[in-house]
Image (cartoon, rainbow, N blue to C red):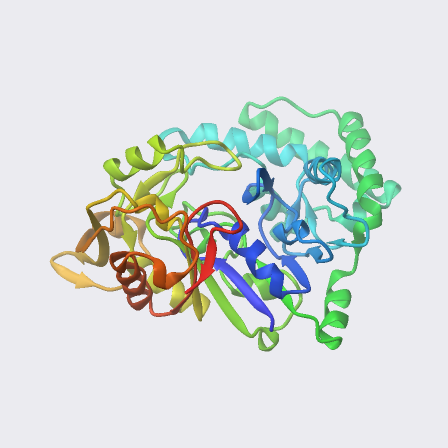
Length: 421
């Protein structure tokens, strides 16, 4: 079975952990979009791993992982991630493959990202300033450099010189400092030598695995409402974070996909700017006081609120979600009463799906349904039927409101704190 896993909210849903769990059933894990602006956290025993580009499946012995063509790669950051895993005893040789057609994130992308964000002032998007947007911009403008260029030193140096000359002019116009061609060339060619053994035509390799009846798991980064086409534009990322991105970002056609699993928290969070209709200061304060909801990539405190079924209902439709994995249930353990947004009110009318116009969305008001809390620690529970009845009913209601079958429940950060519904 080939499975696409996507985030059904604004990212940070716990995809890294669920990917790690589902990898037990898979042979290969593929990362198909995004860059090192994503952060997937997996806790195994006393060890904590935070991965940005390498699929979480690398933590399962014997599994093979692919960084495919839809990802934008900062070679220096990827080398650092590879070396960090190797130091911790994770073997990557013959297990990690990187697409030769994946585009590069270069220093001028990061600098341009930062300068543009600074100039926006109050209208900032909340970018991680990792250069992801400008890198995808160059890809669309057909001026990007790819891994296939990087591993050919003469080709890379010639193309890099021209790109740095052009982007230094852009940086100057934005008030930034110019880059040294020689410094960038030296640093990136050194990274190329480390990455060279992993680089290949991943489309051909993946299709050969399909012919051999291997089970492939596609790992999404970010979440549905950060999708460049379907998210709360312009407060989005620069790639397709929805299920379709797994096909275009890997070269595997849609008819070879068997199911889509959507990951969502038992409440709602968002990092950065943009609308979050169910945001609640009390929920944020409670979760932050517990030491939860801080970004794995930026360390920024996440904005938190009640579960938004209007959003997840739309995510289910856009992605074709068949099954749900609901995480962080234990974050609600202490509450006497829990609210869930079941619809929006806009201009006096009740609506079931979020409007595409951000200005209109911001004028909407959530309509809530109240659910009794269970006020019991669930972090030690390992079977759905052993959850408090109120917790079981709450999870079932979230699945019913979203419109997909509940498959997995997570009650903590550890690998073993996960069970089937």
